[in-house]
Structure formats: C-alpha cells, structure tokens
Length: 490
Image 1 (tube, rainbow, N blue to C red):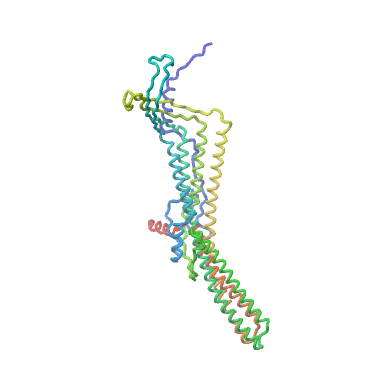
Image 2 (image 1 turned 30 degrees about the vertical axis):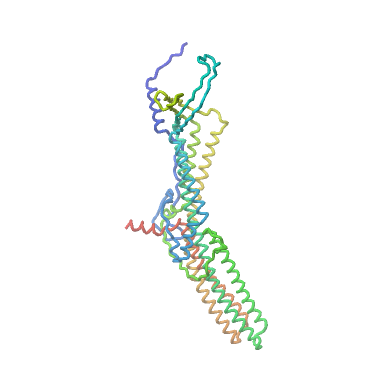
C-alpha cells in the first residue's frame, strides 16, 4: 500500500521563525546560577546584639573603597612602610600582572563574538607551456595580481561563545578580588610585623633597665659577701638572674632582627640595606566599630573571588554542553584579480558568499560527555570553595572580635599583676638589706616581676595584632563606609 504524504502548512513558517529567533538571540546551555544562600546570624557571637537578620546570599562588594586603615595607629614610620610596600612589593606586582592577564583574556574571548576578517595580496609571474593542450599561440607569459579579503563568522546558536566570555569576565573579576586580597594581606602582614617589632623594642628597653638593676643587686650581694654578711650562694643566685636577663636581651635582639628582615622583604627591599632604628612607642589599639555580619563579610575580597570563580565554573558548564550541538559558520570573500597592470578596477572584482558550514561531531569516544562531567564537578568544587570562604570569614571575624575583647581585659589584669610583682620585689630587697631574709626571696621576686612586666608588653602587642587581624577579617578599612551609611540613614 503506498504511503500517503500529509502536508502541514504551518510547519515551515514555525520552523523558519524558530530558526530566525535562534540566529538573532541564540540560547544558553548554562544552568541558572543561584549563589548559595548563607545563614547570616543576627549578630556576631563575640559582639553586641544587632537587629535580627535572616538568610541572605553573600554579595561581595569587591569594588568598595578600602582606605588606609593603618593610619589609625598614628605612626608615620608605619605609614611610610605601607607606601613603600605599595610601590615595590613583588607579591603585589605579581597579583597585578595576573589581573592584567585576566583582563586581556576577556578581550581575547570577546573577539569570537565578532566576524574574523583577513586580507591578502599576492603577485606572481607565470609562463604557460606552448605544448599544453589547446594551446593557440604557443607559450605565453603573464603576471597575475590578486588583492582580496576573507570574512568568517560563527553564529553563537547555543551560547558557547557568550558563556565563555561570561566565564572569562568573571575570572577577571575574581583576579581583581585576588589583587585586593593580596594587597590587604600585604598591608596586614606588614603592620603585624611592625607592631611586633615595636613590642620587642619595648621589651628590649625593659630588659636593659632590668640588667642595670640586676647588676646593682649583684654588686650589693658581692659587697655583703665581702663583708661577711652574705654567703657565696647569694652571690651565685644574683649572678644567675643577671645572666638570665642578659640572655633574654640577646634573644629579643635576635627576634627583632628577624622581623626587620621580614619587613624588608615585604616592602621589596634587601635586608642588608634596610634597618629600622629602635624606638619605644606606646600603641593604643584603636576601637573598631561593629556592624551586621551581612554588611562586613560582604567586603571580604576572598569571598568575592570565590563567588566569581563559582560563577565562571557555572558558565563553563554551558560551554561544555554546547559541544553536543552543531556549529554554524558563515563565510564570504571578495577582491580583485587581474593579469593587467591596473588591478583595482570593477571588471577585475570578484566575490563569493558562502559556504555556510554546519558542523556536527558524530563520534568522539565520549569526550563531550566527559567534558560536561568535568565542568559540573568543577562547579561543585568552586561552589564548595565559595561556601568555605564564607565560613572562614565568619570564623575569622569571631576570632578577631573575641581577641580584641578578651585581650583588653587581660591587659588590665596583667597590669595589676605586674604592679603587685613590683611591690613584692621591692619588699624582698628591703628585707634582704635588713637581714630579714636570704637572697632566694629576692631572686624569686625579681624573676616574677620581670616576667610580669614582659607579659604586660606582650599583651599590648597581642592587642595590636588582634586589631590588625580584625581589620583583615572584615576586609579592610570599613570605618568610613559605616559612617557614610549611618549618615545616609539619618
């Protein structure tokens, strides 16, 4: 029985309309991108309560201004070091170069959205054999001149090119955030090393005064021993605490030298040509404001970088899926071809439209399927890294808030302990001079007093370090941003 053909008049217009829509707009094979929602607490655990907050998707403000937060320490030397690091740090230069490369990659990928045009020109001299078939006038010679151009354009029907451009643009934004992160880390590392160095300067000054005091105490003990009042055991005890103080002074000098070398490397200078004069400076840790977690953590450049890399991985799924569909390329060429002297004439012109090439991979041994799986796995890894960066940001913020609060109380307690130890030392020396006790009580009191005074200085240094860590945890100098926001609300 012959097969009967049924005509469907509406099919052709519908197919034509669909094809036209695809040609004009194309479609995207990338899945919808939805940043992972993060449970944002109403307030930090280690801070004061704030108004309730719900679930929010982190929106990193990597373009937010981050001012010179270290200026709050009011130290011109630190200001100068930070400026020198900005100019000469090789770490910062490397991050800047990576950012430049990422921006160039965006331009490279975007070029595929436009037609590719190439021009050519050639000239050749040719002699045809007189014995060739159908030769009329025997051998002949001529010069051929050709000037032309070729254009090709791939229609982005499935969004392969657009998704690749979107991915490279997101990677450039991630590189920009990485640059901000490297800059912030450099600033914080430099400030941390500097306050530790100044803390050691204060310890050095304390130990130098202690060595002088212990030397006088030893001389007193020797005098009493020579007068028959003290025994040799007291003299040896006095020498022991003096030598111990001198050893601690040498250890502080060694630590200071290492920090000086670290600072030199951070600002891009050789340690052999860099030095910082000893200076005892009483730092007062600046009070850092608190705000809602959703406001502060969005400023972290590492969170911004992780989010942009997750977005780029999402777009690359679309690139991999587009390989399952055919690609359509349009081609055209034209120019002038002449064997006469004047080639740029209308009779010598030629042009060709086409071919329109439809290319579809039929068998690739499972490569396309593997590429889709790889892209999906890369996205899952990037999304997990993004969430990990948010958790790290919350942890570091809580650590910084806890450290600044608890170390402030520790500083008060340690100061009280140092004052009590100093009174005990003076009482022990008085009793020893009066013959009411032996030198063991003096040695014990001196050792405790020195340890307590050093602990006071070390807690002060740790408070400065905690302030710097807090600034790092909140993504830089957010004080001005909060002030501007509050002023706008008022």
